Image 1 (cartoon, rainbow, N blue to C red):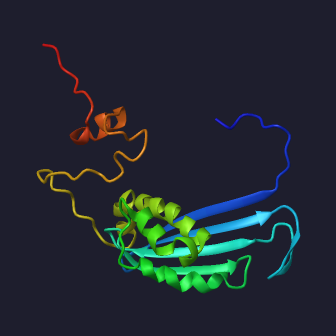
Image 2: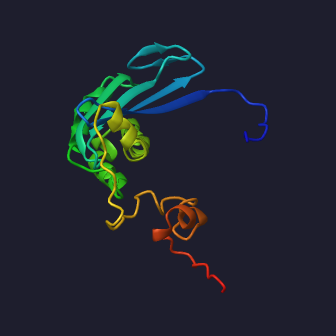
Image 3: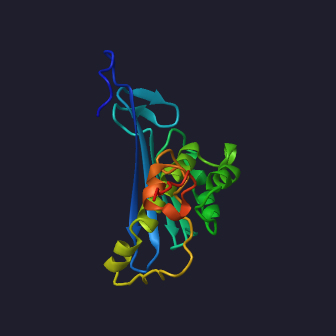
Length: 198
């Protein structure tokens, strides 16, 4: 269902964030984020001169290479367009992500590493959507991805204790006392158990 009909308005700015998940031939995963900002009007920039309507003010990429445990094995940032000549100088600092794992607390780690003048606001913002894309790519598509490169994923031992899937308890629909967890992940359901009358 679309949003309601808006009041008459004028388009001023567009930010686009796209993320892509890839399985590599070596079995690692590349997660790439791309962000652009464009205006519908032209203006003059002190560092870049005339910026025409639709020309990116920001045009930035960030790639994380991850293993199956979501541990970052490599990181690369690229700035194609930025408002200031000095913006791209911070790109190599994103290599500090190597060795960290995308897990609860990852946002706090990125704030500590790249908060304030230690990072680029826009590249750091990309880490959030990249992290969720990593979950969708690596956890949700692991078997399919491994088959694409000729690897097999072993079947889970049905007698082994199950670990709680990391996405449970992270949003309204996946509340531990909610119907989705009750119906599809009953081992981890924390709501009231239904009693069967007999």
